[in-house]
Length: 368
Image (cartoon, rainbow, N blue to C red; front, side):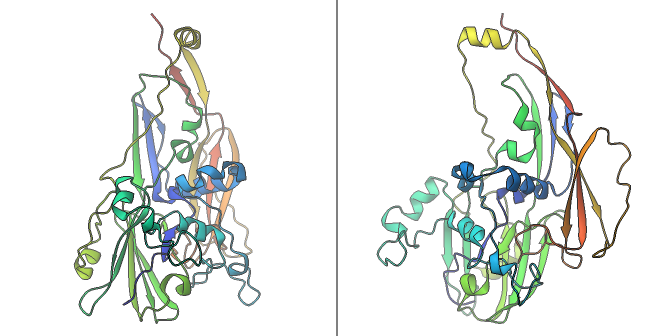
């Protein structure tokens, strides 16, 4: 690729929750949440079924906007969702992707459509955007005969604990609790080959283990128009450093570490109560809290139109609901960079979750 910028070329699927593959939670030394793979698929289901236009003011914070495919997914000429190597859900027809791409600021971009003199840089510089840790295009390097062009995004990905697991939705106001939270990230790399007009192939790699590919490529016209034939490579990592050795060695473009922090920060709201209110609140210093928990199982090789009967576990008590997420058999859309990560056709991942059986006892502090 020779020309820049391609600042609308790649974005996140669904929300920043696609970055998290699984978690474990211990409270005061007691395991509360066991590790389950692909929790982002269930968490996206929760967002799509619980968010509304009344909560839209937080969507830009968590990187969420529901995908609207229209003709891209329901074309009379091609009724397939996300054909291999073809971005069915693209920036032109997918309002959700277009909105999510807009959450990442480009200082050279226009604040008013069609007004050439309305660049964002007239209001705030890239240096100041980095100081604010705002999501922005932090570097753009034009390619030459000896090095590849590159675009670097610095994204402030805010992920709320209540969106990661239902446990955090029901924990009451308390203190002296010792949480241990382990997060397993979907750090990954994707390559996609194109002939200057369309994409012809793709591949996905993972840094540690198979999971979900959180990135989604835009369509060729909106994201890469004008580039010559070649192979693009995109990666996503937590922190301010690119860990992909190929990108660092092949591009040789001197990209900086980006305008983000070096590590994850945990922000917990603190509440200061009036003395009489705190006394009244802590009189009953033992509280039982019920919360949802869920388990994930994968059922493979279920052909279209076939029925299936599979015992996933006989040790789950008080089962309340089952969520089945169909996926493509040949190219699971959790690793398809040309798709938005919503459900598809053949292979099924079944999410079982039980309600009210897990029980947590919170010891509130006693006022002396």
